[in-house]
Length: 263
Image (cartoon, rainbow, N blue to C red; front, top):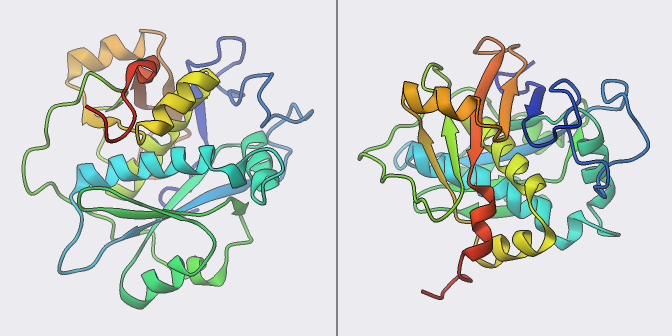
């Protein structure tokens, strides 16, 4: 199992479900009749971050961009209804939610971009997200990409989180690679998405999916984890012990966000 190929329990958003079985709400179009998600075929959502040696992206921007990439995939017309990716999306969300972040540069990145998927850009980061694939069914162009080597830094102190939109708060007690954190904030963004009404989802999408990523201080983290907000809980198979990694705060603020390009 790769360093961020870790099934997670997504809790806090769905009070009727336990942390071990949390997933799309019962009336979600992404839930089939299956109830035992461990018995379902397991899928993974691949994300590839563009990292050139000479010009790597800033860490926080890579995290934000990965989270936005997950939202773009969830909302794409090909992912819903009768879209070409819709069945894979349903199968993925009916099983354990897995995301894997790999890195690419040069020709590797160009080959990845030739596969069906969506490239999302940030201030310095580029992340391409692909429709879900079976755990043992990765396209060869992606299977050979490395999970390791996603260590990134922020050359400058990141700006404070924007309180006008959702904030994905990272656990200050954990030491995760950038790739692992990108997968975790992707889970957090998905939890936030599941909380919203269709009108709120449309508003967030029209605004360009603005969000912030920041590490909480210890006191704030304790408050967040008992607040009832959506919590990502890692299974602890790689890098870290089992426990909470991300809290998604302020999802419903998206309803008041202006469309992209408007003040």
